[in-house]
Image (cartoon, rainbow, N blue to C red; front, side, top):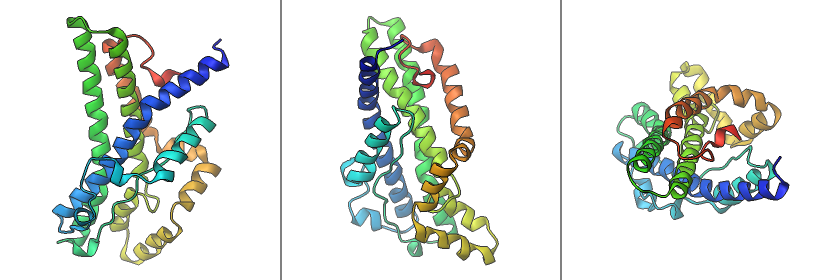
Length: 240
């Protein structure tokens, strides 16, 4: 049985590895929204200097850094929640409002899914490098551990943001699928901000677990693909 000091050390090391991936993933998500909006005719994000993968313009000190850290340590690494400063868009500037709104809304989640896939490919590539070259097992193992966090965090970000709960991205897609008589009533929930989502997470955590089932299945698939190429056993954050 590990001593509490060992557990605290592992928790800190995991946080150090996961935080850069998390912040970059937030930034890439928002950049994708802004770039997609630009392609649809709205240059608001460009004018505000948000069309960059540099995380600094996208960071909200509380939502991006402080709150994830507090939740991470408060739950001993079992729960994390946060986000970047939302990119502002002007849907009225889209050349086609319905098409533009759907594309811009899905751009962020598609980017997170792409990052998860790239992290998987890099994980496999590092394993192959370790087998064929005289590379440091400790360095490769640490890098694979970071990439495993990249897969898990981006799958969660992808499918979490697809939930049809305002103001998440999935709510914009569902809005356009609803009958016209229900659309404005549904969108009115956006005035409550994240309160409905936080209430669901705190009062019905089992519901969130079920809604995120595609993310968990994606992680299980990643474990199957990655295990033959793993260096050591500390990479598998999903089994701890």
